Length: 258
Image 1 (cartoon, rainbow, N blue to C red):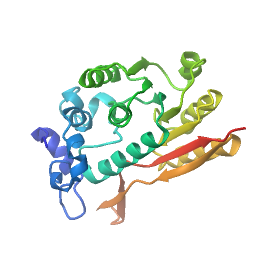
Image 2 (cartoon, rainbow, N blue to C red):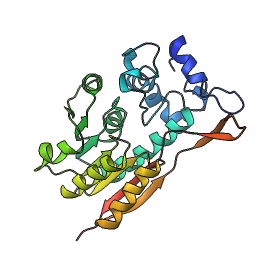
Image 3 (cartoon, helix red, strand yellow):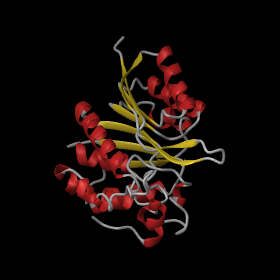
Image 4 (cartoon, rainbow, N blue to C red):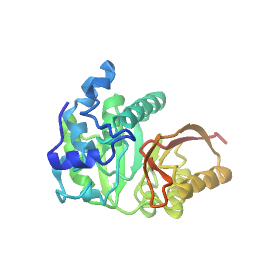
């Protein structure tokens, strides 16, 4: 198991548990289940989940290249990363999608999941941040294939324009964190009749409302909900405990046949 740089390590220590124990991948490397060790030691996933992914961007800014955005797996949190690894392995192998849409490419962690858990796939991924193209190229190169196709564009306005005649088996929607953007993505996915939708970060009340409003108005139903973990990390200025929400709030929807 690799260790991050000293500068990055300080970022991980900022998220120690309530007892002050480090909870990063390196500190807890002995707790990784034997069946997962090879994947968690994969050089590429280490680069994608580290505080400064592929060491790009300002060296003092946490995930500066992505404006502070996180990912589905995170070097700071081993426990949550294992939970998400298990979840996406289960979901991807359950549905075995051949053609996939992703919004919110970020550092390509979902793309790494697809390479690891699917025998054959074609992934079309969209992000307004052009830095993601570099990561797509690196992940494709790492696996020696070109299954991932990147589009630097604005979601959801680009979805029907780019993919109006494309048949997708599954979509992972994680581009924005506002009610109108997520609802727009969900509606675009409905227009394309994508049978399975995965949405991240429903812990945000606005995003959860978008999901619920969408389900109420369409043939989709929520078939699985995965909540992340919370850790009371510190007290605010009034002495009240503050919950530090971590990665892993995901809902899966299926489109009912009409």
